[in-house]
Image (cartoon, rainbow, N blue to C red):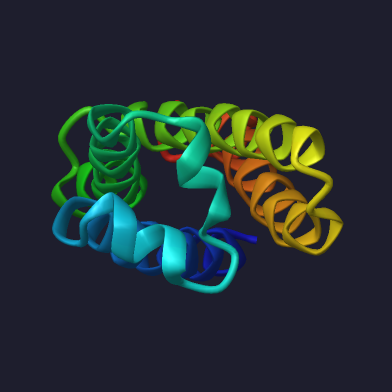
Length: 127
């Protein structure tokens, strides 16, 4: 199970690092023009940047504390943060009637929930 948790956390970290980096480097207009990027119209440019920072922090939090062995309890907390980000994303996409994107948000939510559950559980490396 530990290997599965590492693989899922790693994949989530890559996805959120890439997504966060894109939100931090591209303008709001370029993000809005991208497929599935219409959601940025509902937020200010600053809020989009904050979401990008949160995604980068989540990516780092999913891997780095466990790798370094420093405060590994941050891994499941980062996973809970991803779950919360995905709940917010799903609400935004529901309001915009973007059902296809919600499926991806739900997949991320489930994977992050699994990491949180596995790392908070009795066999976690935090205990």
